Image 1 (cartoon, rainbow, N blue to C red):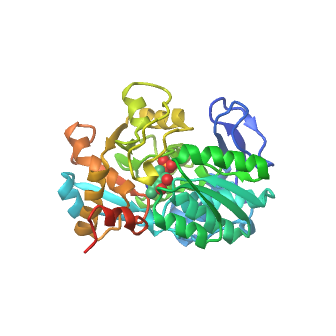
Image 2: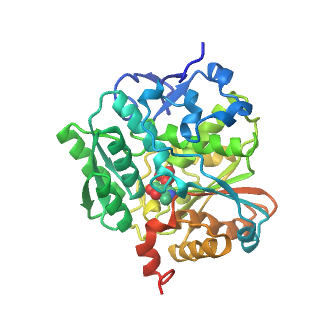
Image 3: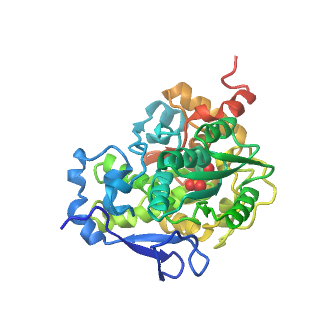
Length: 397
Ligand SMILES: Cc1ncc(COP(=O)(O)O)c(C=O)c1O
């Protein structure tokens, strides 16, 4: 018999201990993120690379390896299936030869956050949650607001005053209650948790909730599908809380078990802002955990995550893959937003531009060779960042 989902429970990402999945869950008993697991042998019988063509053009084409148990329980706006675009003119400018951009700016609310929210909100509703709360650097707030509206639920979003104006506006337009916070994501997290406890709202912050990772892992499924069962040599990913990085690393193991790929893995390269780089610092100091980044000076919202809850998982993905971590100044990111626009017509957010900006330095340091296949994730649309782009003198007349 074929099954819609082969989800078979939650496990602690640190101890491997099985934990209950029949109620809304946050961290494991050991205080670590929970990971969803699947019967991949069963999933492999129907989830076959060669049969994907007829499936829905959204993340839900991979329903066997997502946790939602039935189609009617899905909350979707048709997220995912973002294009993988060759960028030869940009490659030339960066001194590499094989460059692709996976353009997540095409998602319903303009960022990759939609993938995680579609799964997390579907699961929250299926488990009987009516009221949610979430801290966000910006884009996840807009995404969460849209998907809770789509599900007919309520959410309170805590977002820094310094987040892009577009994120404040979209969150309100999608009907969420927005609290503007003086401070960064860590302070938003503190206030959101306190609010959740006081008001009985379920908290869906990064890695405290187990299913956002599941939505984001579909970026790796799509990439492998778009490359016809291949993986690139290198993935360059902008890292705040680290869900994108960790989720894709989880996905590659699943994809091998499903028989879609062999043992080769891409090297995972994490890019942060010089003004908030806890993962880059820990990586180069050979540390297993990150320290709280006390003096956040970057203005790039998606890269302003001073505390990294899943630090061990991020560092493990980078190290096991043979990747590295690198920091980029804000000003250089903004130059690369303009370069990607002018060279390729791509609407690249500063976080995605950070990855492009890192490439010449990565080649110089011999972390990447010029002829390797490289996939850069553009995690959002540049249109969300008009305030910072106009303020930098770019794009204003
Ligand atoms: C555009 C953009 N890129 C990257 C990130 C970082 O993502 P992650 O938390 O998965 O590391 C964010 C998070 O806010 C973001 O909004």
